[in-house]
Image (cartoon, rainbow, N blue to C red):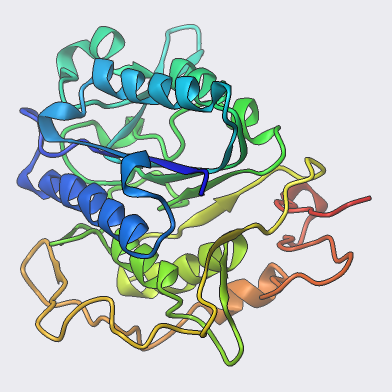
Length: 314
């Protein structure tokens, strides 16, 4: 299996609120699930959390993937980042995007944070058929609300290539709905990888279906605070690729045991099964739950300018 994963959970930095500690727990749990479900081999998983999620070590982690895939091209590479994205605007109006590392100083973001352009330039050097970038970048605390960035890099630089997909945890740049012991986004992500949304005869977890499950489930669980978004450019040849397969259908064993509880920042329990799903979103964007034959449009807004996905176009 030629799958690799780099999982980054920045943890609670010196400038952060305690709520940010969940980011390290998120990365560790995703690493566990990728291995347990035979999605990525143990030796191909690199997890960087807390003091190991520094600017230098994150860059070294990406560079190690570049080296590993240089002569042995990967099938699928997972890059998961749980922490802050940050946008800095110059007096001239030019934006710079950053990822906040564990050793980033709020007073010196320019020199201590990871420049988004550098981050994505290095990822683009990874030799892989498919790359999935998961960004849980909407956590509260530590960085000015007005300068947060949902996607802390130039989207075009990454998404212009075939089979390059970003799933971000929130559509709006606002303070997120915080929870523990995992973020709601990661909790739903893990359930999605376990086929929680499967219907009869489903066997494959695909990237588009996972994204829709995240959007429809995270939104109500966070009291409509977060709107996860699938980010893909049209006409790039990106397909609805498979992330993992269960030959016998939906796994019978629950992902979380009966004692598991998810609570918000005030300690109040979050209902693990939402009372509602955002079906209006699916209808509005003409989302198909499966792709067959030469169907092209997966998600399309009311205006042509809002078309997000266009696959298998010949």
